[in-house]
Length: 60
Image (cartoon, rainbow, N blue to C red; front, side, top):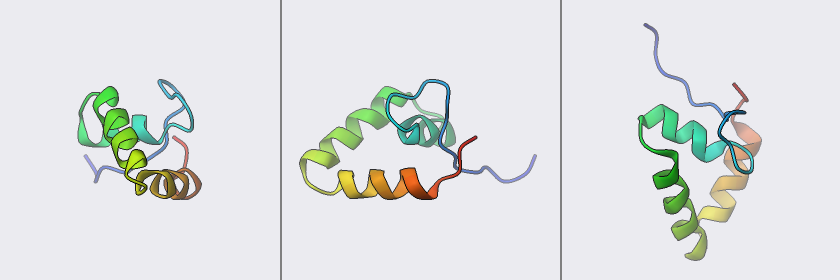
């Protein structure tokens, strides 16, 4: 088994699939990752990070 790779996912996505991909990578519930993204977004840090990740991460 090779190294794990971070992707955006098509299945289970709500917007761009970034949170679903991060959840799969770390083997956690996608709703927890989405909640963390919303909390970071309210603090002003998550929106830019999400947009950058949506642009940079390849789709699986």
